[in-house]
Image (cartoon, rainbow over all chains, first blue to last red; front, side):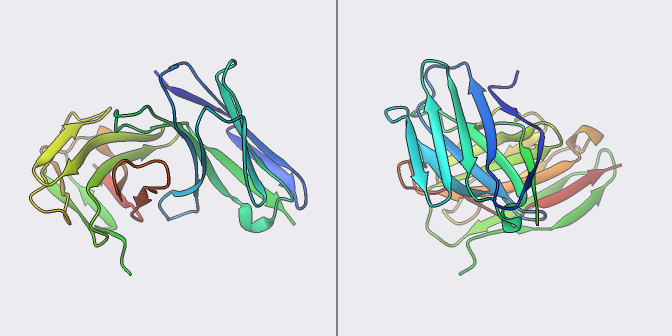
Length: 112
Length: 115
């Protein structure tokens, strides 16, 4: 059973456009929600993370929006660039669990 | 600045063979873990350790063993390889807890094929 559901599976965006990736979870004990970026042949790298006490977190062109009541969170990439082409994973865990549950990934392609 | 180093990068095994994936980190991190990545499944936690001498099971531990005799090393052993263990394996490390500013660093992965 997938603890974190992620969509879409793949996404194609024009350069300069907005990329939006969505995730949903059921476990209300989750209290940490990171996003990871993975380039081909490399390991995932932390992009941005949020705690449920805030509804939005922004770092440069990357923004996490968090809806606690809907148990959903999303990644917005503004002004998408070809260099953003990668696979993005959302994840979630709870304090003390030491088990980060990952979504299934979204393969983003930004067309020049 | 090595970070998290995994070896080997690629390996082909026959069903029933055993092998060890090596993982080493030079950041003095307490937390280390192994994940496997399969198409359409994301990354799933196999085993983790919060310090030398301490290991615990993750989401998919069956068929794998780990040990943590030093802070730096966290090898993953496949006892009797099965085709279902064909996957990409990632080792990761972090200060504990791995949140609130403590990033999990992943290695570059080990591609394992079991035939």
